[in-house]
Every structure is written in structure tokens, then in C-alpha cells.
Length: 352
Image: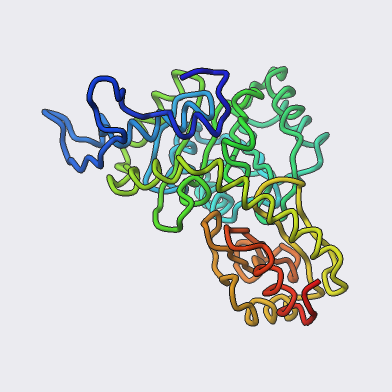
């Protein structure tokens, strides 16, 4: 793999067989419970290996795939000693925070919540906690954390906390946190990498050999292995990540600008790139009204697919602290004018 190639090119080429030796152009779907004298959960399969090689090439480390994004989070938590203190953004994926809260209730972890954009607080925490769990942009508020500064502080700290970055929203096309000094990067492959709303999968990537060994051992012990079909679909989805993200990002920028000019929209949260944005209406009733009146955009909880989805996150128990009128919009590959007509009509206006 040529390091000078762009992430978009590497996403297409990494993990492919050598066509020169007569191999197929794509790694086939290998469905096997055992390979020789070992279970596949211990040694993997060629399909898993190809997917892991491709993601690792994009993130700049060694990847380990799991049955879901939450299985990935659980595997990383297994690295931590009992009594560890973990810092997590106030606004971040609800499932992750739920896992941390459960570990706290069991007495396994202490949890410290920090505002995502309070960089000074994160820098201070780097000298006081065992783990920095970072997420940028954040779900669902689309806050951008100063990863470079925070990760530099962690490397310089005598506490040497483990640093984990959830890169699901940015994708490995948008940013590579290992290059900024992160210890582990995690993705819900279910989202943008898979890209077609047809699989559950997660992946962790690290540049440290001892962490890679521990992450694979955690997968073996817990049996949180990826399915054969899911791994094959995820690799296929990864091949088009670059072009999908580019198109969806262009549309997201258009919608963010137009939403900002709509008098019923109080705030637009868009980091300037990527396919995710959020916007605030007056209250929860207004947000629910919009969701009920959309015809093209799906009112659904997931994101990162070819279809656009919207959700009022505050209706979920884990996100009850989110502004009640906030709507998270995952922009897909539909025509941007069709999407705007749908949004404008649901907002009670005419498309401009």
C-alpha cells in the first residue's frame, strides 16, 4: 500500500488479493466456524482479515472487527483496570455513555463528564484520569473537539492516560486520530463505513502492538466476532466510502446554509464538513411535528446510510439532557433539491 495514495484510493485498494497470482478481484465471503484445528473466533477468517487490513490501512494501525459498535466499546472497556477513571464528553453517543454508567454502577469505573469544547478542562483531565474518551464531531450536537491539543497534553502528562477516539462521524476519510497521537480509534461500522443500513459491525484500530493483542484477546474471550456476511458487506461498503462521503457532504453544506436562513430554525450545528448536521427548533413539539411531516427523509435512529434520516434525540432516555428541539440529520445521497423541498415543506415554508 503506497502511503502517498489518498484515503479514498486506499479504501478501494486495501485488503484486496493480488490479482497477479490469479486470485479473484475481491475477497470472497468465507463462512467457517473453524479453520483446521482452531475456531474462527480465535484466528479470524479471510473475509474479516481483508476488512481489517483495509480499515487499518486507512487509520494507520492494526484493526480488530467486532459484532457491533457496542461490542467494540465493551472490548476497549475490558482493557481498563477496576477503579479506573474515564473522562467522556457530556454530549456523545448515548450507548457509549450508558456502558460507562453501567460500569460505574458496578463499581468498576468512575466517570467524569466534560463539555466537548472545553479544551482547558480536557487538558487538565489528561493529568488526572486513566482514560480520555474523545468523540469528534460529537453525537448529536456536532461539537468539534481540539483533538490535537488534547492528545498532545495526554502524551505529555505523567498520568499517561489511555486515549480513545470515536471516529464514527468523521470516518477515516475525514480524519485519522492515530496520526495525532491517539492510542485507539473506534468506529460503529454500522454507520458510514458500511453505508447501506444493512449490517451491524464495529472496529477498533491501534498502532500499539500490546493493545492490538489485548483487543483481539477480548474478542476471543467474549465471542463478539463479526458475522461472515456482515464483514463482507462492510468491506464492500468501505470501497465507496470516499465518493459517498464527498457527495453527502456537499449536500449537507447546502442544507445547513438553507436551514440557517429559515426563520423557524433557531440554530444550525454543522462543523463545515461531513455528512452530519443538527439543527434546533423552538421546542420538542416543533421537532416532532417536523419529523411527522417529512415525506422523503426517514424518521429513524441510525445514520450514515445512502438514505437521509432525522431524529429528535431528546426523546431517548440517554439523551434527555439534549436540547428538546434538536434534530440530528444524517444526509444521504438523494438529490439535494428534493431533500430541501421536503425539509422546507415540513418546516411550514416554501423551498427557496
